[in-house]
Amino acid sequence: MPPWLEWTTFGIVLLFMLVGLFGLLVPFFPGLVVMWLAALGYGLATQSFGALGIFLFVLITVIMIFGSFVDNLMMGVGARKGGAGWVTILVALVAGVGGTILFPPIGGIIAAPLAILLLEYFRLKDWKKAWKAFTGLTVGWGLSFLARFGLGVLVLLLWLLWVWKA
Image (tube, rainbow, N blue to C red; front, side, top):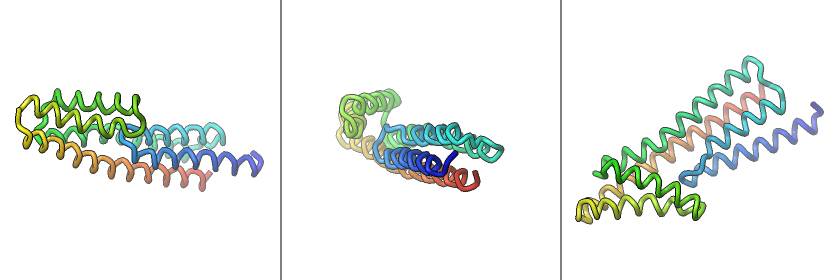
C-alpha cells in the first residue's frame, strides 16, 4: 500500500474511532460498536490480520460486547437500588432507545429518567420514592458512562498498538 494511502486509511479510521469514543457521551449511542467497526475496517483495508492483528481484534471485540452489556446493567442496577421495579426499568430502557431514535441525540437522555420518575410515582404514589429511583438511575448512568468511556479509550489504545506494530 502506498504511504499516502496508509496515511489516508489511518486518518479515516482514527476519525471514526474518535467519533465512536466521543459518541459515548451520548447515552444509547453505540460508540463502542462504531469503534469496533472502524477496527474491522482497518484490518480489512490494510490486510493486517496477522497473529497480533487477530489477537488485538478479538480483544477489541470482547471489550465491545462487554461494554455494551455493562452500560445497561449498571443503569438498571442503579435504578433497582433506588427502588425501581423491573417493569419500570424495562420501560425506561425502551423509552430511552425510542427517545434517542425520535429526538437524537438528547431524546433518550430525557425519556429514560422521566419514564422512571413517572412510572415509579404512578406505581408507588410517592414522589420521594420515585425520586430515589430516578437518582438511582442517574447515578448508574454516570458510572456506566465512566466504564464505557474507559473501555473506549482502551479500544483506541489497542487499535493504535495494532497500527504501530503492523
